[in-house]
Figure 1 (cartoon, rainbow, N blue to C red):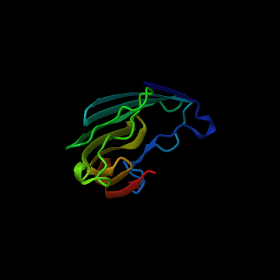
Figure 2: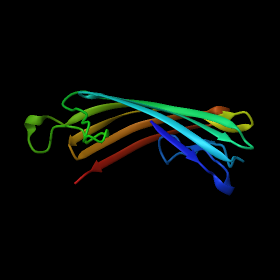
Figure 3: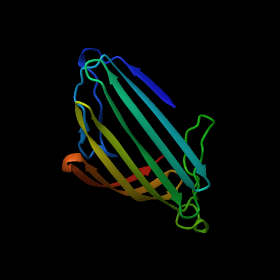
Figure 4: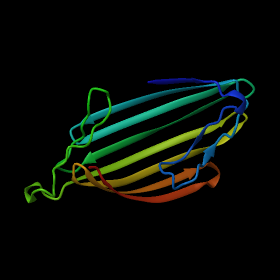
Length: 179
């Protein structure tokens, strides 16, 4: 649970969002709003069981003053290891640790590493009353291949649709090595 009460100062309040990657432009943006203050409330939930993780987060925001508006959005993410991998809850801080995967490089007995399927859907609605900041829905699907605990290859596709015909697509690939 998160709560943020903001004093936007002379610049006014502004809300904007970018879908899943910095490769795509911001599709929703309220621009500066004449507001004396803004409040953002967020709620997140995480469920981990073996090789499956479900994460959901939602937010609501409101402005007060000359421009009074309410906005909302959120996302749901699901990932699942097909074999030989599990999600680590990490320390007692409530976060996630590195996944538990076999080391495919040290011995052939461990196979070819671990494959994780990932799916994420998100939405943001920045339209209310006099504010036309836009609406967006994005879906990301892909897989992660872990050759060892510190080495991951990622390949994901991201598809974005916004109000007014705004669209975007991206193919995201990354090789990550953690020493």
